[in-house]
Length: 364
Image 1: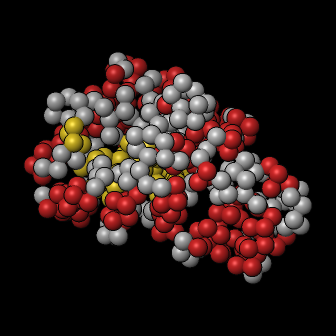
Image 2 (image 1 turned 180 degrees about the vertical axis):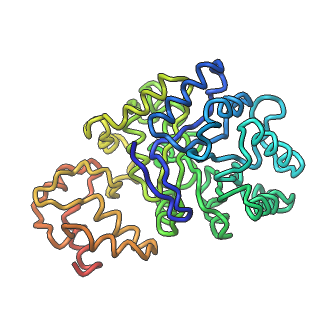
Image 3 (image 1 turned 90 degrees about the horizontal axis):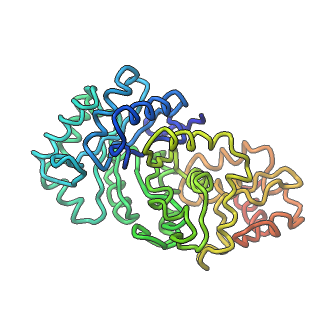
């Protein structure tokens, strides 16, 4: 397992966590064994926005004895009164549901209490007006909630709530389809979405990724908006390469799904490589470095992806980016202009010219 640190909270988080959308459809025995397998494989992070109420009891049974070693995202606004997922901003219902979730999970605290699934300014206004935000803040003040998060599909709403200063983790849908304006939740332009990722990195706000496979549509050429399917590992690597991302949360149904996810760490660089996207992404993707490292290896040892990332982050206001850049073994000024990366870049970025621009910016 690999881990990343949320700079806002200090939590060390497994880069692959658990989405729980449909594990409620498994039998209790299968679900408990799947969750235990994930924990034993090093997964320590789970999202609890699930399709059905059974999920909470499954977690309570599977992981209550190791609760202190797990990190849970619990959503203030998810409603399971009917046994299936619902959404509410009614304060009394939110309070009742949070109490019920904690009981089912066999815990007395929440690692990340989430402002749940807001996609418009009106949702945010209702969340505040109805007292749900204040309730969440009060729970944090009492130590029941350790940190506050936000789940949304909309960059504009994300920025609006981030401006409040209360958010320490963002749950956002990151995948090639949505980033390139393809799919139900493809909200915001390609540039707008990337600016949000860079903002989170610059401000130390970790991103936990939902819908990395676009509900499975990206995995099948018959449903992929690109006309060709990607693999799970390509989608996971794509999300992990985005600024700010600390963990990717694919949904699981059973032990086999968990085994497939854990197989990511045994996969070769070729199996993770998503450079094929450059052959069928829209025009607005051309010329923009996505840090995929398809251009590697550089004959002169430059980490082209990281050099680009630190440059973009510095431009987004990340005060630490320049220091990270200068600590690299090789800098943009070491580029000889051989053109190797230009020829290999699937997104047609003229990296040799960009290296001159970056060297001038950082002075090295």
